[in-house]
Length: 253
Image (cartoon, rainbow, N blue to C red; front, side, top):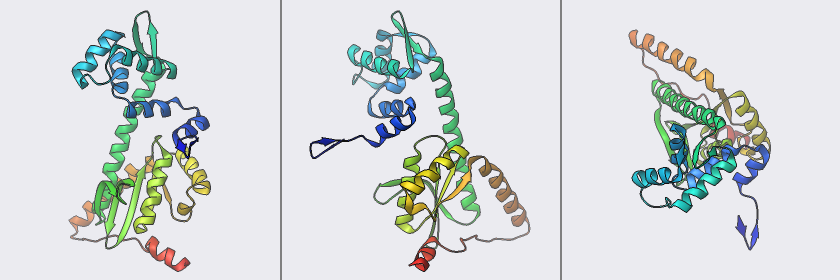
């Protein structure tokens, strides 16, 4: 990153040096360069030559970034990351990448399912809910936002992606409307988040609440079951936070 003719490591580079997780670099490449993800999907089906990859990309995404040389460069990047291997004149996906791609699809499906359940729980409890809520002029996009009479709960679901981003979004939500910040994650994710809260996201220290990803479905089923029972008895109610984060902050002041 350039600053007054000086250079420093970006957040992505810093995270890679700390973890040596090549998926961080792959995620960056597929966001920045057209065709990277499509190449991985294509060569997973069967070994492909550069000409076959070029023809496929031109038909699917147009001519931009699909020249023989551009594709060769992208394949070299993927080989360097260990995502693609070369046999003769053809390229295919590595066995490690097959596992990573499958795990990524499963994680994405689980992420979506958890958000769906949080939305339903919020509705049952009487909150207005919003998926992928953009706040602070685009500075943060919250997975699920609950709202009711000036009270807010911000939910971020982290299952192995960018935990720095999840915590940054929750911090923004806290500063925005004193939203109660919830992080749904794994044991490993919670441990990493707690370390970062102590060092980087200190504003969250006394406010963030953690929930295990595996606990969301039982909670959802319990809330839905109770709601059905109460509806059968004619009850209607709204559950509110006992005390808003804003009130707590004002008391400390």
